Image 1 (cartoon, rainbow, N blue to C red):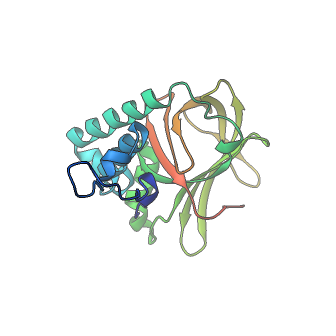
Image 2: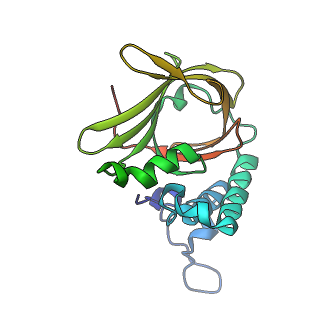
Length: 206
């Protein structure tokens, strides 16, 4: 999945230095959050949403360290407000269930498309969605409750017409949005898994 990084550091105006010439380096103008985000996105850019990271402990540790840096930057922010409502698209994760489906979709004669989290804070709903182009879809419905400025509790159920299965861990859990801005969200959950998503350029609906 291609990552658009341009908005993380917009082109600054040219400014003449006292010694002559112009200073145009992005790092000069980027604030700490922009620099940390750019580093994180660079680290995950070739990781196939986390599939490759499973076999590279060193790379995983580097990504987790970058995530923890983002958490420090976002520690005093509110990440469970109305701006959490969005269609979020997976960039990288350590969640084995999602990575298994992404990696093994070919065994079922298909390929995994976008992997989404569709959140509606007002309706207290979260849908975890895996798309299989052109029109296949697998999704898990969760009821959510805002527990703190960064924590969301959820109760997840895989639903069909006449049955439902509570999903692990035992159908209930929580995740914390440790960093969120207009472009990306970084979360970690009750099982110690990590998630990095961006705001999809479309809204997914059932």
